[in-house]
Image 1: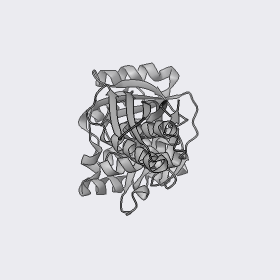
Image 2: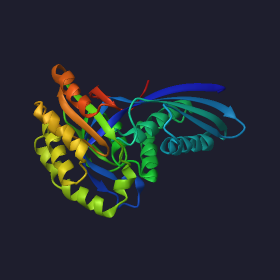
Image 3: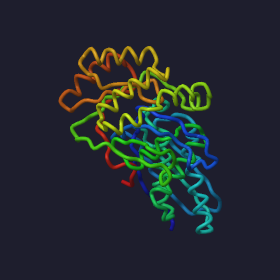
Image 4: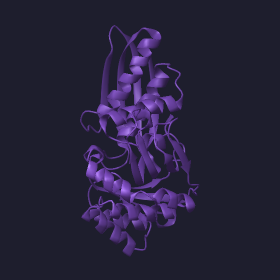
Length: 307
């Protein structure tokens, strides 16, 4: 092998409500229970692999968002496996195209790590299963305190219910069957760093109390509308809803869009509607988010994949 290219895409994932489960000594068993949606926006990673005298790793992010530490962690794990398998060193170049904002609740760190690891699995000819690649991305998230349940959801796509926490192959994910006529209108007002929430005991306890019975309530009536209503209940009872998010939700409700709530964890909003009414919901949300990210997204039913 002189040089090889590979590309992979991982969808964004928004969490509607969740419970933190981080007591296990095995990081692959750490994660969250809850529910969320994968979106057709996401992150695409293109990798170039060349044989070299010593290992080197360059990560180029477009647009530049600073040091991509979760991606670097995942890529280094993949390169180490290749070193051990083939007794060779590699010059790796990773180019990431960001289709979603960071620190806004769209699962960007998981998407970046997962897409990069999938592309490297192909380019380095490692032959790992998708679950195994997902485990590497999940480990990188856990180590950096950037996410708990995004990767296992991004592994399968669609409208998901995480009934058991953990990485792909450890966690258990069910899904809500929905028509492709559903769309998700999203907007981001500001940033919330996941580690600032999941590392604080008091906040974790409040989150877990708020999310205690929601999973059972959703499974009893597994519709995307019920999921959105439970998300709104969770956002208020957990104390995570900010004033600006609440104002946007009230504006959407006033406009006739009941199925909306805060995206976890970010100062962001989602609204479930159909294609016919999407532009109307977008117009209301854009007024609340005059600058920054606002999109009408389709649901991604395929999950992370090579492209």
